[in-house]
Length: 229
Figure: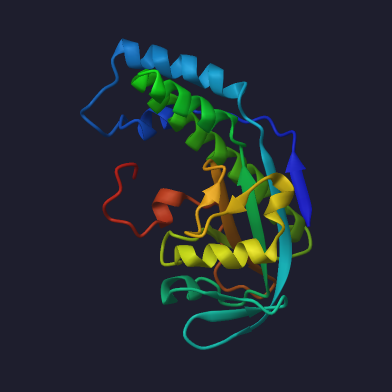
């Protein structure tokens, strides 16, 4: 198990604008006021990030029926067939949780309560981009560890997306002490702080399918997403 901190994040302005509903592929363009607010909230965000991540490598015991994968900790993941097909030859899972803390979301709530809606929306988008950037960096560190030993890695999978039920979040939190980085799970399997992400990455020397880069939009099966590239 490893805890990751003290990583400097990089906020992409175009990504922040995309999460506000603007992108190069859309007719709707941000005006100068939106651009200024976005820049201001990006700068504010850098002072509110408290990134912490945790991950651990867990051995797979076997692939059972109906999409169940039994783990060494006597727990089991259940995946849709579309995910199982991408895990051929996997012998272990990297399981991780990352967060940027709760300072940013508290500020977003404060801005909403004050009627500063454009600022609140922009800062919330900044938080989303920040936790995604941090998650990518932590996943890269984890994958690099095993690649140096000759292992291949799958793309990452997160509960609630692409055929993996959100209820499986509970298995992740039973497999890794996310409370060590201040993240807890609600009864509805939602993470607090809200700007947190969890994931599993398959790894193994005999993997048939491997991917050097993962692209959330490219791999996502959702056909009705406002943020899809």
